[in-house]
Length: 298
Image (cartoon, rainbow, N blue to C red; front, side, top):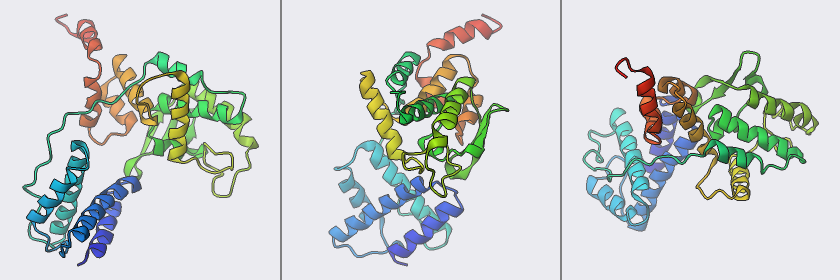
């Protein structure tokens, strides 16, 4: 089995059996291609079935010079997953990455915006243009529903159930979930769809896509990042803000106002509640209030 064959089979496994998103699969494959490039540059001839632990240790040592500890940890995790797959399929007897440890890294807390900062960003939108009404609806949906960028750009008109107060979202691994949507977010989406979107020359295949570019096609992830970056700069906010920041802010503000962590997990579409628990570390100031309000020994 050569590297191309192994990567092809592994990609199929990640997509079909593990149900990973295309973005996740791309990252796994990139790490393997990084290893293959290292082998080529080092004139090392080996296969996925014969590569030994010492070579992998050398690769990780050289990689550590180029990337930070977090990226190094991700690469090690990806390689462990790849060789676990080969063991699972009986291509190898042992995983050569088994005893290789990841570097110790601290838990990175996500940046958040205050409600005032979000309002400040929204006020920078030029509502005199068609794109302005669309961008306001985009920002309000990111913050009002806590969506990932990929979930936002894939959102369909047929996913909107405003009468019931929900939208249907396709998350990681093509998993469906229903997310509640507030009246404010509904209002701005309705303004966009009824006053702006119905005047766009929509291209074939995009008739059901909610957010469209000027050419009547689905927006890209890069375009959403650009929209957010420009608005943050205009607002004079000096934080590392991305579309994902609105998702973090959504969860943090819900938690600070007394929302149940399990409910936040369901709305965010987290597989494990431990992922949602990161928001417990952002602002503990409200926890004392909750204790004094609800504990029988308060």
